[in-house]
Length: 225
Image 1: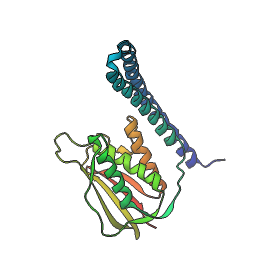
Image 2: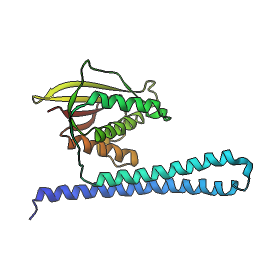
Image 3: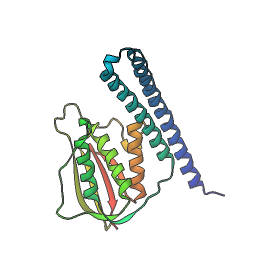
């Protein structure tokens, strides 16, 4: 017989997955409606060969929408599965965060920019899954950048530090200032971006760490042992 605690956890996971499924299905439905409009427009304009450039732009929007829908479904599938990590020794947290912030600055989406403000003199290394953590940091950066207040002129900043928590050395990564309507954006299922944040928290926790939102800051703690 399974322990009661395990059954409660299973029930909570199913409940969260159900909530996530309903919301993301709603999001995908809206995306597909938009794709239908683009496709209809493209079909009508294909009769005019001289407007090929404009048709290519519309086709790009169509393909982009399909990609977003596919990515959202992939995130939902990932969230519903147990986290499987491929850890390696000597992974530098500072390097992973720097790679993410530079990548976002070089992307076409200005709303996803985060500035890395604190770079330590030496690496912050530990045993981590670099691929999983990089994707988790990217999801948090994008979520943080989109949670900036309208009256806030500066972008979100990312800081890194070391701190002993209960005698365990930890890497601390913070994104601030941010303003989420949810009390806990790491446990929210209000749309595909929120599910990405929740998946990022699961990855952090699978590494033995924690992710929380407090005082207009997102804070991730990862043990270095």
